[in-house]
Image (tube, rainbow, N blue to C red; front, top):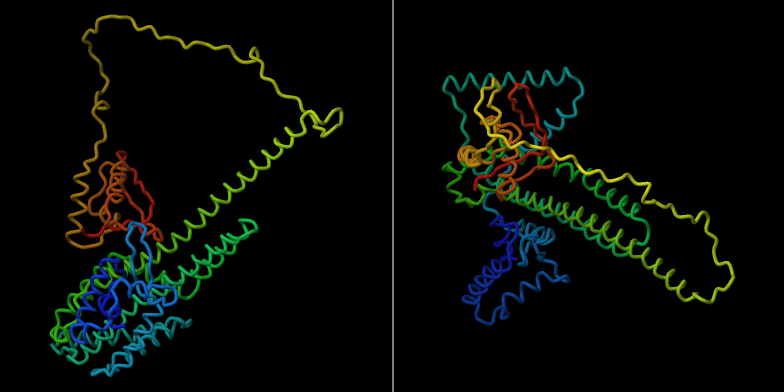
Length: 452
């Protein structure tokens, strides 16, 4: 338990490959044997790792990612719950109550205001809040600043740290639910004997039930909030500012908390990949079902042919079957149109003489060329200022000069960069003006460029 806590929970690590976790486990075993003796934990690190990931234990989840042939490991939600429970039994030197009380008041106020249907009551509450803000602005202008003491800062930071780590645990639980659904779908496909439509109706009904549940709606709202570039930039700025406070520095916090939102992104993306694997399994089931049906039809046809060959010469004058209208429609050669050779254009061989014409030659030089290097430099320039940057923000900063052709080159750059994320749940518009001054718009899924 101490090793899994150090390797996954405290370090905010979502998954570890087999070489990485073996190396860490060997170091942990070496440290234990140095103090407790060589007879402590005498087995190899690989033996312990396989035992923890076995079905009868289920402390670790062993799986193969799509882009890797190495097994990866992650703790299961049940293991994480046990770790949280054991950690809660420890005697804590500092227990913060003020920040939790303020959080409760804030949540209750949001619930009361969010469910209020009377406009007058909402207006009075907003006016009261505006009066309080105006009074605070007046005190600040007079030089009376109300600052938090170090105790309040440390208390709130510890609450933020615990909540941020708990979010990764929530992601594991959400992903576990989708994995259970994927496993159930595979089992049903293996034992299904009725029609395809009934199976798809049941599967999509359960998936919609998960997506429409409180957990599913909360996950979608969290994912939409996290995919906002402005929110990510604001979160990065707030984390850097808080970590620079003297009161927080005395706590010696884990610096990896500064990139916790990227860990959230990685964990959320793994949950999205689990849903994608579910869709891939359904598509494979449909393809296999069609292939099996075609194979069954061919087997029936071959059985008919074998029976016909076996009865050849034994039927005599008996009527075996009656076919209605067994005539064959013939296409006679003379009914088809006669071939007509194409007319060959005669070009006289005459010398070309210089002449004069009033026609414009601009069309010969109006070829469209898009400088890909320039577009990549524009993307890197914005990424040097902030990360991530959406495609619509890039086009707003650097308008399209070549129209749709330049937009297509941006899409090619996004497809070749591994740091690019496509948010298919949100849509954005790309605007430009053509040569005639007409405003054009393209609607496509939101594309985010991240810093390399």
